[in-house]
Image 1 (tube, rainbow, N blue to C red):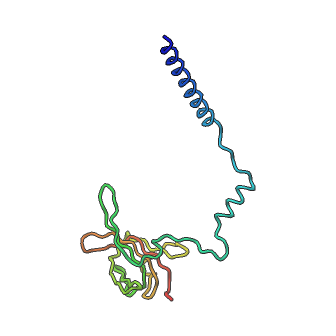
Image 2 (cartoon, rainbow, N blue to C red; image 1 turned 180 degrees about the vertical axis):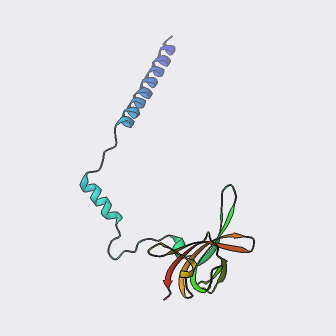
Length: 157
């Protein structure tokens, strides 16, 4: 009998301990998180701004000269990207040469968007000239790459 009393007492103590911990966790979760003061928010914002002499981190894609990507989705899509100088352009195609010498021609159609950078104003393919620095995004189907976007940065260096 004495053994049974100790067992029941131990179980009761364990239940109370667990209940106390659960109540403490529940109370902690219902309290709102403390909000930073205006001074703390300002300090955080200053930390996020680029400091003089420090470079802003750029996306790895900002350094890409050319490449091919396979995009997932209901229908997989192959996309070509390239940056470089225009070596030839007309109303139906554009040829671009990257800094490493890679050269590729792209078909141009009425769905191709042409944008002037930095203004990002709509342009026409006739506004792009030999020697302009451009970025190209193109959909690839078989051996044909059709430009979907041409970002024209203007005359090269």
